[in-house]
Image (cartoon, rainbow, N blue to C red; front, side, top):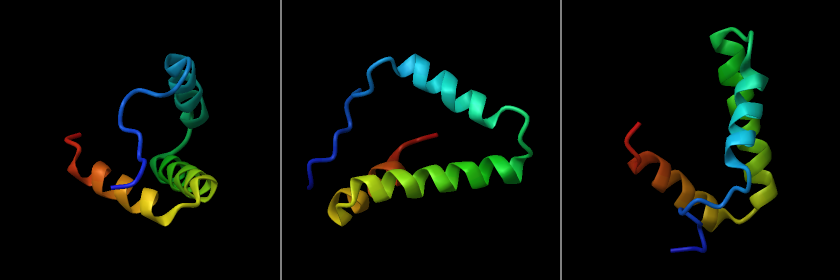
Length: 65
């Protein structure tokens, strides 16, 4: 496995969550989904390590929602 961090690691996580919610405020479902997709791609590009990204996909798929 890669160096994927699965423990809490975001400083001021509540503030980030509030920003995320605000970014979605007033959007239709399709626009909200598109924003999420763009955010995932921006963050994936920032990470840039295909092994980490594959591990993240697997971890997300295993997580109960």
